[in-house]
Image (cartoon, rainbow, N blue to C red; front, side, top):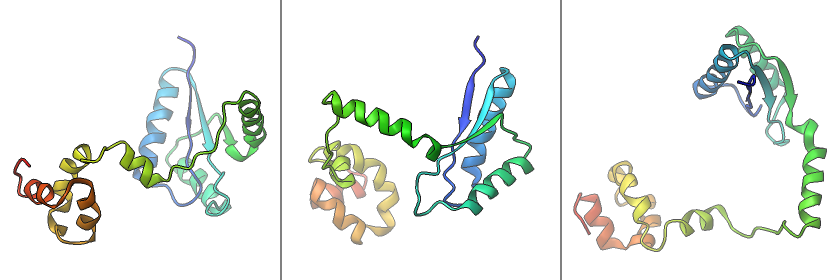
Length: 155
């Protein structure tokens, strides 16, 4: 087996949380077990929210946990690579603007009925059946179906 290269890529927009630590630990353990490389890659491209003090805190916290990295990288150091790739895609006619909003993308995958979405949300919405959350869902499936599903009945 070729020695694996794994990375942990937090965004320095806040402090680490347990989910971050879990991902870092799994990758660190995998690299260590297989004689691989563990890269700390700071995803620092969010210029508005990223802060140097969060970068320092990430490094300090990983060090405190004993999760040392083989090398450290910053996404912002690679922006020229992305520019080159973008220019290649434009030259090949494979890059086009996207006019899809997150809401449009979300609802287009559900279809008019919203069946794939509604059943899991039924449990989360029972305490807010008549609130604004429900009002936003009603256009997707209709009031009769929404009320029936909230009662656990098939619509």
